[in-house]
Length: 353
Ligand code: MAN
Image (cartoon, rainbow, N blue to C red):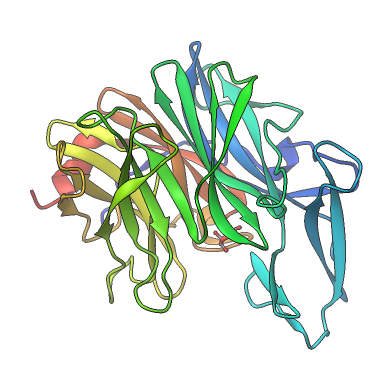
């Protein structure tokens, strides 16, 4: 194992106690999986804030956003389900099934945090974006923030009883947001738009799921406008017997290097342990994979990565760049946000080129 990450000494950098709930009566369960970007000399994180109402020994609380309730843009409805109810299947801390309907145990919104040094962050008191409408009733999650010129292209997971889809929005000033609707229907997530056009087209990684035949694999597509995506290619399947045997998904926008586009992605094994690895893509024919990590470049080793809401998990969808250094911001055990620095040269050196 070659864990290449130099973790911040004061991890975790953001935790539930740092964040005010979006509504009275809710509790912030998890602060995780931030998009990361630079804006006006500051480092911004667009965090996923997962909230719930308190559960008890006998009942599980399940939150759902409801347009018909007061509060902007719709209040939170809390379902209380008896833990002994025979119609309840609750074997994953993140998702339950009740009367045959899948529900999330938390509802997430997106919140900003700002820093002058990239290590110490101040959290905004108000949500930046809440789930809205019928495709986001279970919340919005895991936002990538790709910068293209003056525009930041936000791509996030939109969850509802309709399925897990991909929402898109654009901001220039981190105040006004132009919501552009769903760009990919269920089941799809982990969309990272490249921060430059390739051969005149926008390019994005995405992760459809095809559980019957196939699996949770990374795909690539191109678009003339970031709305309409086509020319899909599957570029990375999960690999039986390896650290990424169960599922794989993109991190954020790949990093241009002279060897190719370097993508830091997550993989989970059959025990559901999430690690990070790298893919190297051809600079012109981006669907061609030049190399892929045999071993993780980062795996859960710190206490906050090994135990939490969803234990044994490192998940990233945001980083910033400074020369050879990539600062990876990541969700640890789906509970807190941590930071680590890796050398791009060191990552490339682990790939068989
Ligand atoms: C999976 C996990 C959860 C997430 C749901 C919906 O179960 O990634 O964290 O809430 O999918 O996207």
